[in-house]
Length: 393
Figure (tube, rainbow, N blue to C red):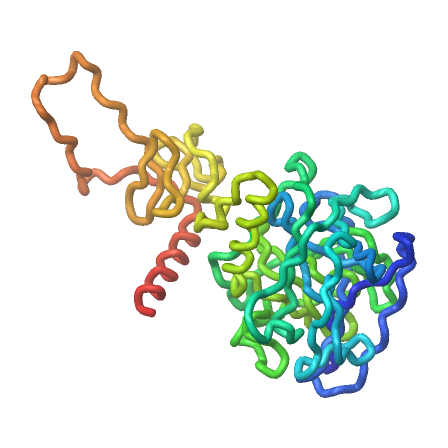
């Protein structure tokens, strides 16, 4: 099998006259990857505005990125750096390396659904690369962060949440979004497209080591030229991967593994938040990325489906909680697994006896009437299994 790495799409003066992708070289499958990517067989996507189009004016190319904070865009490093030892657009993991990084001020992003001359653009102020020795090697290190020179308003695009706290599972469903072409001939590049019902093939060490590094994972299909740097997202809409490379014919996509670079992503975002003058996102300081932990509580309910977190406790919508995700005022984290329960109001003054009293402990013979949806139970069971593994490890 010949491999193509999601190649950036080259355009002229934002006219979207993309050149064709070069044909795949005949080479051993453990060496070759090509820099190209686009959502093949996807549909036009006007809604995912936090999946941004990137125009690199220094090299005249387009890529895709994920807005994960008002002034932070997660993308692929090959969208912002030159490469050495690339063979006719193809990547050889044993020798291809990143070289010079492009000027941030010549890189622009847009939340519009089309990268074109009439789109609104935000400029870059800094390109942040992965830390440590050996990260100039292409395979396994194809991630970069672009810090913008001004925050994008939430009214324009609500930032995505990267899944930095939960590892991926083989077979997990995801979807992909990008501004790439729809085939190997670069047709349709520059429009945001989305493809659903994709499934993870293998993750990190579970993949063939000759093809995939421990900081990567392999997806389903449909990634072509121009999707480079774009996100794959789980069904909770969290960013789980950064499009890196794939095989000819828009097959065998390989993604950078967001979970494996979690600390770098969090630290960079905290620094960018200080520069941008806004409070850092909760996920950067340990708050769970599962949206159930941020759901509103207190609404009246009869069934879990009526609640944002799919959990109804004693006629009131609730949500899961833990040490990192405390309950709102007026609620306490009760039970195992933990859910927010309303704190009982103190007795009226005329009911007080005037002597000291101690609130009774919960009576195990009178359990609280929990009503939880299957989704909440599954998530909590998974959380308990992870905690058990952490204790055993």
